[in-house]
Length: 240
Image (cartoon, rainbow, N blue to C red):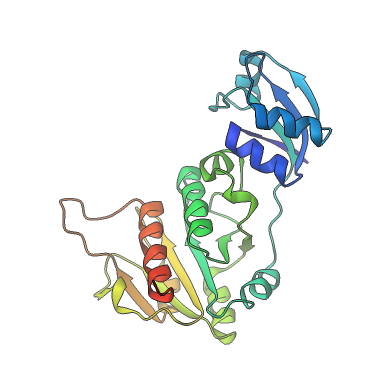
């Protein structure tokens, strides 16, 4: 089944990856590199009014361009682990009950930026890959493997058998996130801003850490927290 993505950067990234079936353009769209890539790849394109594009993507900010693509493909846990094992220190990100597509898209962007190997989410009760996630990720959705699993706790047990250490971020933790040496295979678990990481997932974690707050707020947006944690892991592992 096909679906739609929208926005200049998102569609351009999908064009470069050969994922686009068809393009719909507003009469005012004149981005040179995008137009050239559409012609080079011989993608069918149609002119549509701005109002028609608005309806096509439920009034998303499309910037005059919408693309029809095949459904996003999820990878299996085995595929994800096989790819990650090529690294000296594999790094997977597990999301527990992240329901906001804007958070999910921003997290994918940080995962790509800091070189993590993929993301694990639940099949139910959590936002999946969709057009909003794609738009917010600014192309990262095309490069970050995402795996859907039935049970996060059971998945952690499987990953621990493969040699991964589980680091969960939770506001109730006593340990500072900077106190862990991340030079090992790591599964970083991040929960929703409201509910945090579930009890069973915390029970299967080797380290439970928090980001100290110096201001007046007592928590960070889930995507911001993930970026802070990933940046710290990158710095811990990467010499200057």
